[in-house]
Length: 440
Image (cartoon, rainbow, N blue to C red; front, side, top):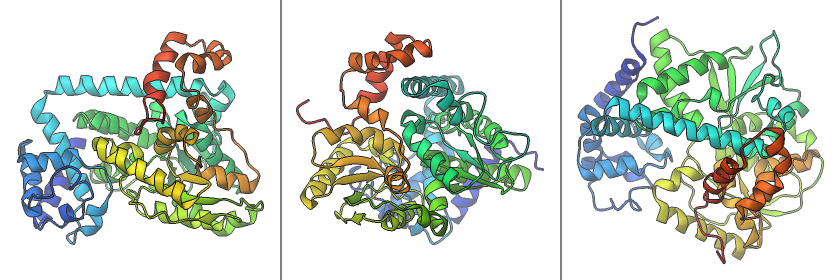
């Protein structure tokens, strides 16, 4: 057990990577954000050297600052590095250093608290507009959760926070694990925050406190494995919090596996359950930021009987859809081109893997000749499992008053403030739209 603080443990990793970095610039050359961020003419070696300057005192060249802020967490930089450095982690720490240089700790902490409160409000409100207490409990949001007993479960299924806005996705994951006989406990939601919301404004101490407290809650499994859904939480835990905790304590309390990789690793177990053909042509909406997840998703799709997987030859980048928001014009162009390519290829459905792009894209089903569905919906359809996509149904209404009125029974059951619910619907649902809907 070390007497290192969390911030000191993080800093030792930063220092080691800075020492290992040769400033070759391969990470910059590999980064898909460089050109859309307007940095194509910058010398890669100068850009990464500037990042190392920022890490020392929060100050550095404009090109390096722009690169840090334009990171979509694609991860190409990690595989490009020959020195074992994780440039994605260094860019995250550069953003923390910039925030520290620009604002004092009280201001950064206030911003983190505000962001956390906004997240908690939006997640709680949008999930309560769709679910009763019994289903919320199944997702670990009430006093009970699946597998919660005196005996540790085989696995913890960690939802993260934002998937609870599109709860049919998380519920299908649980239904699939139930069918496979997997024993698990559900944890997640704002009360089990990974700490990324606090880290983004530069409050590394509070981020570590939040993440470490929840790591303790997640660590009680027979297998020593946590199955994760949210890619942001996965990156935060595996690239920042768990490595720091390992330096403090000498060991990691668990290993974390993304759900798609977990499921693809059990294809022999899953395949006999895929009994019903799903005869449609689909394209996969891809974000490769977590290694192996898109490959796992492809393998699962190809195992579903009746599926024809079409390559619409569109670029895949970013950790998930929401991370492309740092380059909004680029994101809009990518989205439009993908929709056009899907239309021209005659697909029946564009298949999302994560929740954030499903939230953003689902209402476009109204305007294009294909459905927007999540991969788990297709797995569930072949297994005879069905979960209604209530989020998409509501968002397609495109009217906040109509949405709140349509949820009146749950507004009353949860004693929600209808005016606040409307505000969340406007900001947290209808405004969550990277490309304008056609005709308004």
